[in-house]
Length: 387
Image 1: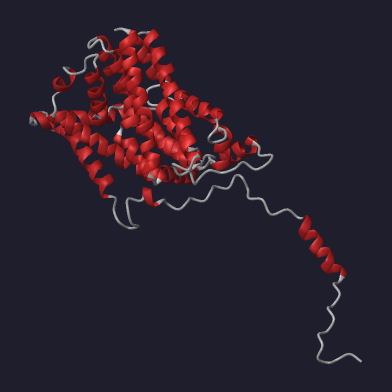
Image 2 (image 1 turned 90 degrees about the horizontal axis):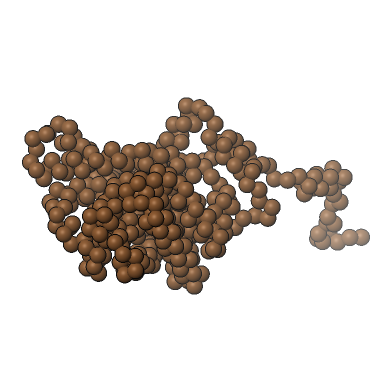
């Protein structure tokens, strides 16, 4: 007789329970429809202008000052000289950069719909030389001004591009678009134009390679958004899913516009701040004070670096100024420094990188690695290239 205090023997599974467990093991997990609009990610703290519910004073203050300058240009033709220059500068920057900003906002919204695995598959493995080549090629081919490129570059980092790929993309992009390349060729000739493009791509590759090596060595934090491609990952279905998420429709377009503006706020605040600062510099610092020091000398190179760091020049404006340095100042090295140092030391890019990467080490890698190369190449052009 069995002990009444002992545990009863386990009941045998019925045939139905066994069959049910077998089916659960064989049934794959439910697939999410690729055409479903992706959920809007929670807004990063870097994009929200501080604490939640707190207005972004830098964004709205800079935008208000910038729009006030544009209003001065149209409504106060008899304004004081400094105010007239400030207003004209704001209007000039708006007329040159509006299309790049608009396309950049759209690109941010579209890139936000891209799976991180797709970005990794298109750009290649982070830290690899082929991945850097793809990033440089994308920067050269993408026809945007430097402000639009900046928004795209920050979005690529958020989608998993390595730090080296992001820096290479930013350095290769600002003036290397097709339209600006043709403008530059018309201003300085095809020979100088091709030389400048080759040298800029070289700087971008070296900078990206060094940055990735520093990440591998643990000197710079890696991109926390990076993902590893799953085995057998296919690009085609992923692209189909993205296209489905971009299907026409008023609600979807409004959602895209909202996502683009939300993702761009972090960069827009520094762009408008840069516009206002540029207007103030031009209003109170005469151009002649800069031009007389831009000769083909070591001092001229460093002063060019200082000027292009302080003066926010859109890519459309950088080509004519660089051409003027080459043809009138007879300083081709200064022209190259002016074109390149804007991407290497521009405070808009520095501050945007800081808020995106959340690391000063990753941010300062851009100017510390690329600027010595730019200055060395500028000096070599003066030494061996002639005027």
